[in-house]
Length: 171
Image (cartoon, rainbow, N blue to C red; front, side):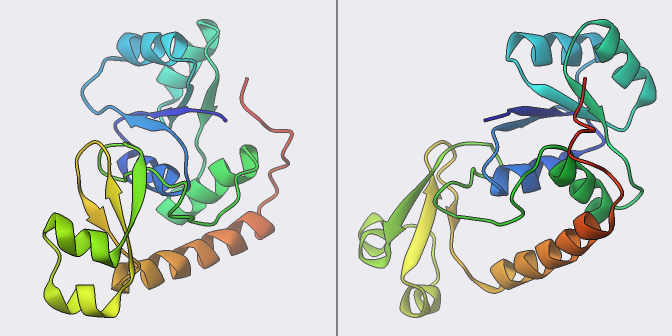
């Protein structure tokens, strides 16, 4: 499975690629040279909106994609189309949107035993939870889940409407 590295302009994209199950690093502090080196060392595709960084990565032989679009949904649609990504969030394979850690499913009984920072009403309503193995942040299919599903529906429509072929994969 492809791994990504997002530059400082694509933090929101990084979080969404993680939710879609992709190992995605994000760096807002690195120089162009550091980003290219990291992408090469870890065999990651560098995603950027910076034309100079894109050209530098190409000259260095690093796989890269110059992300098209001026809004989040269009940019995500472009990446989904180019890499033939299924635009669906599966909590069983998602990564933590905050730290990129792997997630682990825990049933409500275990969540109660672990005394995680989950409101009592949430524990009564939801039966499944996911915890990040790295940062220990807890997730469940609450109100935010329905908002994410709606966002992905709009992104899917943009993918269908785009004129990008799957053969426009990065160099």
